[in-house]
Length: 326
Image 1 (cartoon, rainbow, N blue to C red):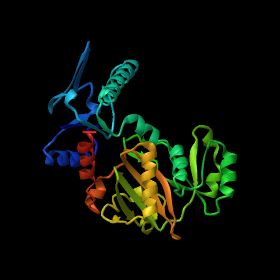
Image 2: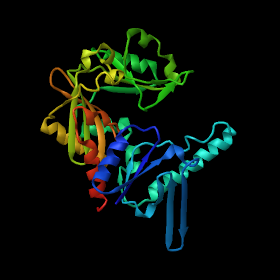
Image 3: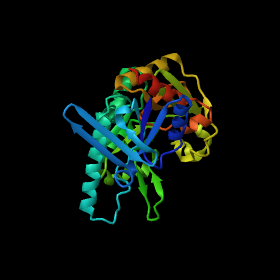
Image 4: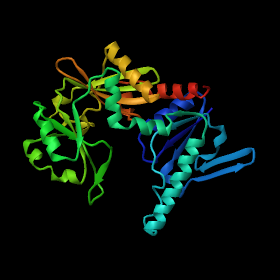
């Protein structure tokens, strides 16, 4: 069996963990760093009457894509190394054509995908996530998504515990030195509520502030549920978003036993979206409520392999190899 891994060259150790697990099982893994196409990786896709030839060539060697038994979709940055020095319009055309080529290739591979790109894209819809989470019986925060300052101010009046704000999409802003500035979850101050005019340029998501006993990261692979907990409230910096102190917490995650009914509801959520993999964020409140925040259909897991030592890469490998027969 050969697993094709769709990723990018600066992806983290999650990829190597799964590659090692696949090879330990005596199977093959081929890494496709999409940022290196078309500048360093070659594709040749030929369709003839009654036959097809699909070949991918990189420094790893030559892969006959017809021999691929499963696809693991991790990250994508197609055309990332096309030089910025060429004409902007020509570069954009090259990137768009490269994307169409790779995305068409991925869609054309009629094998098991973890997970299919259209399934991932639909599951990334945070508004749909909240709707379906409520449908399957999960608790969710009261939420407003708006570019209307008056609507935000009225919503704030109904949230006695305060508001937090965050974005629906995942992105980073880079300063003049090229340093990444991630957009985290932040509290909304009374002064912020008086200065909402910039919403006319970009809508934002506002939620009631939920008191936290613990923050939970629940990684689901197939029917396997790996739940870990962190006490983010011990760090003032991380009170509203544990990622602000992610490195400081790297060895502090503990295994957590979810109540059976919560685990079952999370599995129903996964089934509704048709996902085989998802990384889910929850809050455990001081009064024992489990509040669903979001599901990341291609979310990270690598630090949970170190602490508390969950075998997530092996579970992913098992899914890729066993479902390739389906």
